[in-house]
Structures are given as C-alpha cells and as structure tokens.
Length: 150
Image (tube, rainbow, N blue to C red; front, side, top):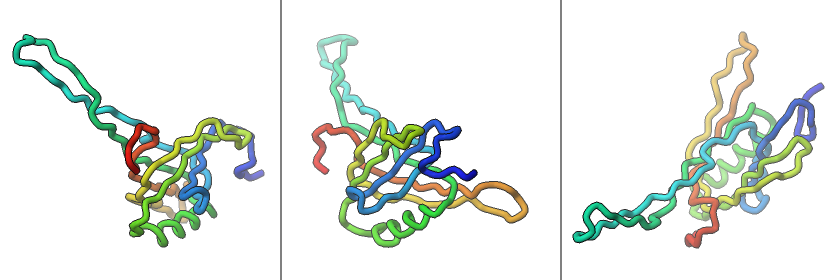
C-alpha cells in the first residue's frame, strides 16, 4: 500500500506550502529547515556610566527556508511556479503549515516577500534504490507581524 497525503500510517507530521494565497499549491514537504528569527541588538554605553550599558531591539533577521521531500508529482507544480515567477518583480507571499497525521493544520506561518533562491534534486542512479530528494530554498522578509512594511 502506497502512502499519500491522506495516509495516517507511520506519519507524524508534514508541511504544506502555498504561495500567493493558494494560486500555487506546492504540495506537502517532509522537512523544513530555517524557520527561525533572530533579533539583532543595539548596544548603548554612556560615557559617564562605567561598565553599564543598555540594549535596545535592532532589526529582525530571518534565515532562508529550506524545504526537502522525495521527488513526486507535486515537483511539476514547483517547476511551474519557478518558471513563471522566478524573475517576476511582484513580491510573493505564502504560507507553511505544519499538518498532523490526519492532514489538519496545527500551526501556519505566513511568509512575506518570498523569493526563490535555489532548487535542486539529488543525483539518482538506476542501480541504487534511493529516493530522489527535491530541495527548494526560499528567502523571505519574515513571518512575524512586527510592523514591517512589506
């Protein structure tokens, strides 16, 4: 029996990726890396305060997102999106949803200004029984509603 998006056997979680409010559904992904944020801090030292210093929030910095999965029929959807939009001046928005085994969303991250950085597929050889892995890397302006102009 093959596994698909509706299978619940032996599956803990998967990630669903949608771009431009559902215009492009890039399908399910097995792994997401780089879904994090870091705040750069600004430090201030007054000349008359000795070793005392004050910290103020600086800017937020987001790591590029790296999506990985076994190459599948949804890989053609990614190729279609990349072919039509990789050099478009229109900023893309999108979302990454963590799905539970029954394919219900657990949490969703809304991404601003998505730009494709890299797409690759692992090498494959007929003599080996390895699954070809597809990887998509995306740069973005963030997933927090922190008042940034997007």
